[in-house]
Amino acid sequence: MRRVSVFGSTGSIGENTLDLLARQPGRFHVVALSGGRNVARLAEQARAHRAELAVTAFPECLDELRSRLGGSGVEVAAGPEALIEAADRPADWVMSAIVGAAGLAPGLAALAQGATLALANKESLVCAGPLMLEAARRHATRILPVDSEHSAVFQALAGEDSAAVERIVITASGGAFRDWPLERLAHATLAQASSHPNWDMGQRITIDSASMFNKAMELIETREYFGVSPDQIEVVVHPESLIHALVGFRDGAMMAHVGAPDMRHAIGYALHWPERRHLPVERLDLARIGQLNFRAPDEARYPALRLARAVMARGGLMGAVFNAAKERALDGFIAGRIGFADMAATVEEVLARFEARPGLIEAAMTLDNVVQTDHLARAWTDDAMAERAG
Ligand code: NAD
Ligand code: MG
Image (cartoon, rainbow, N blue to C red; front, top):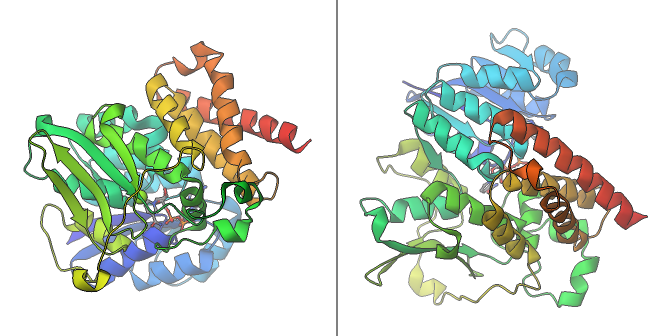
């Protein structure tokens, strides 16, 4: 039996991962599951999957988790250190599906014990890509992409010579506000930003799709995963979300990955890689779909794309600044402290503030420095938001 752990099991990616595991009884042994405040769901999952261990990220939730799992034989633990210890438990395959920079340390711990890391947590690549890749190399293991675009590129590259790659095109649905008049964006509400035209995802990534901070993160993710230069990566708006990415080769050929917008494809591909197994995703009827559309992203609508390009050009710890400022600005929008368009403006201010203090972002790429940079960027983002609100 393959030993697997799922971090962020109560989230959208986590639930889809458990759905796939449950369809193959007897093939997988669940080592650890982790969640946040949704302790009831975490306990239910741990019982159903006979997990060895269930961890909540929040110590104040431990008592409830313990009482809900009483008599089940499932061990319980809580807090960031417990997450790292859980990731350190021997497993063959670990899903990293915590949302935010909190996923970085458990992901590194899973790599350090030699597990194959199925990586949905894009934040860890954005804030510490070189650290993640180095950990995978050092421990002779692998990171498998679980983002639809990056899984698509990974599949299009199977059996190809990476030196023959000319460009990578990732698609974007355009999010909730794709067709809104620009002047309305500043007044977009939380409810409006939290609904996605094609994908059913967690709230944070859904809002990031509307602002295209998600695609901005994915530009950086693409650079880290596939080692191409920023000018080889393009974004195209594709409202149907059926082509997830394309790889262009030096002979002019483009390999496109086409599939239903269902994350169980990317998760399942990473789960069974290098094999392909049956997955419960919709089979497309192309004649019924009729047509696919593409257009260039409008930079005025999606300033996050320009910011991501600046971050890639700058390098160093700027990715950690970008991710932290984005997460905090998103918290601010969700809490009603700033408006939708203020998110990008705030992140841009924080990047400029770090740019003016070059020593900070040129520090070595170590976990400590990433964490310190993350904390400082969050504090400066709070300052920038307070100034905006005041
Ligand atoms: P979600 O909000 O649905 O779930 C997040 C999970 O993380 C939950 O289990 C939650 O309890 C846990 N969590 C929240 N805060 C935590 C903290 N501080 N410490 C530890 N755990 C915490 O999110 P999601 O949509 O499933 O996304 C998970 C990750 O996958 C994100 O990095 C996202 O960008 C990425 N991703 C998601 C999708 C998608 O379709 N949902 C697609 C591609 C990539
Ligand atoms: Mg994606």
